[in-house]
Amino acid sequence: MITFLLLAIGASAVYLGGYHYLQITEAIPKKGGEYIEGIVGQPLYVNPLLSQTSEVDSNISQLVYSGLFKYDRDGNVVQDLAESYSISEDKKEYTINVRKDAKWHDGQSVTAQDVLFTFNLIQDPSYKSLLLRQSFTGVSFRLIDDYTVVFSLKNPYIGFLDNLTVGILPKHIWENIAPERFSLAEYNLQPIGCGPYFFSDFQKDAEGNILTYKLAAFKDYHGSVPFISKITFNFYPENNLLIEAYNKKEVMGMASITPGNLKDLKNVKSTRINELLIPRYFSVFFNQTKSVPLAYDEVRKALNLSIDREEIIETVMYGKGTALASPFLPNMNGYVDSGTLSPNLDEAGKLLEDAGWKMDQNENVRKKDDEILQFELVTANYPELVSTAELLKQQWEKIGARAEIKVLSASDLDQNYIRTREYDSLLFGQAISFNGDLYSFWHSSQKHDPGLNLSLFDNKDADEILESARQEADESKRAEAYRKFQEILAQEVPAVFLYSRHYLYPTSTKVHGIEIKNVNSSHQRFVDVCNWYLKTKRVFK
Image (tube, rainbow, N blue to C red):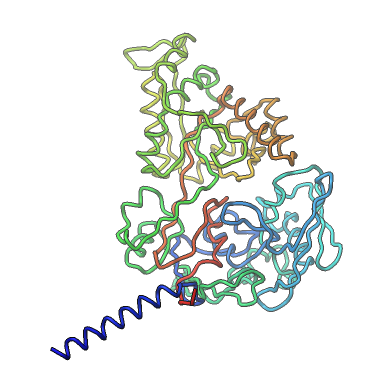
């Protein structure tokens, strides 16, 4: 009995001591651990000048390289390699002072010479960095000294700092590599950057496929040195194999999954779904030059009125999306709240009826004289888009409009339809930026390839707004301009805007410190990676 009491007293003392310790201490991040992420695809160009079209490459590049500026967890542009900067009164010159404590992964110092070298390569067509080169058309740059560079623009542009988030290349590594060898250089897979992580190793299988790609924390990083010591990427040929690997706990996170894949996750209790806002919208773009029915204002307006966006979001995206009435998302400057986006079949039908589009009861389609309210809807062979197209077809049938769906491979769609603008209507997504500049997507000068005006929209007033807004530094004035632009879109209906899908990033609950909310692109989910941690230690409060 006495022994039992002594044991009980001892246990109570241990419990009380432990409880007291927990009360007077707190857990804080501790350096160490390895985060393993799975991703579909293969790395090829871990090079910020060549990684723009590959999610795998851009993901790794985000960790290895640093730009003059970067995005914070809310999607705002903040300084990175830039220690300070100033903008001229006419908004045409940006003077950037490069911080003096930044080092390349091989120990050499980062200077403005590296900055100038990088942007010279971007502007040189020989280096085939087409997407980036378009952003620097008409931009010149010059050195003031080893840590100061000046960018000169022909016209003011409010989104220019966004362009300076591109990773900087080390001149001493790349300057002796000829343009024709640029994409073949070993540094594309064994890069030397100045970001928070440096290249460590990779493993290949017998066929040359890269199985794993390893990074390690850079202790001389100019920012906060990451808590997580190692980041490893495992690569998979298909999405289902990636999910299977996550369920087996071979990886701790997945680059992205579709809402439909949420049901396939087995480790629900040990999974955190990081739900991020990304400025990308999906729409049906109308080509009025190809389709006679779509050239009628009342047809486009009726099609817009008859869409049940919430049904699409709930059915196709399991609720993980936001209904849109314009290309502006709710958290963007100048967004107009259109109120309810519920379908109005009665008003849609009346519009058509009053304009002479009569229902042919035998064929269940409207006709006007000899014209049938029928058009082709093309889209890419992705489950989400195909399902959305099918729902749109059903919804439009309710008002007597007939959409013939054509599903194509991504390459066929891009080469033979989008670039040539050979479609009646196109169900497609466009990735924009939170800064709200939509010039490349809706200005009439962008109607033809490589422009991104997929509706071939041509409106003088809209053009003037887009031109002036991208040069307007006053946010309130810019917001007012964007509201007027949305009014023009609502009146002209060059496209029907559907939704923005949330970016779903599943990670193990063992990974802490992920606080990102808004990202301009998927790879920017790593913008706060230095704050992530796997291990903790207790310290006194």
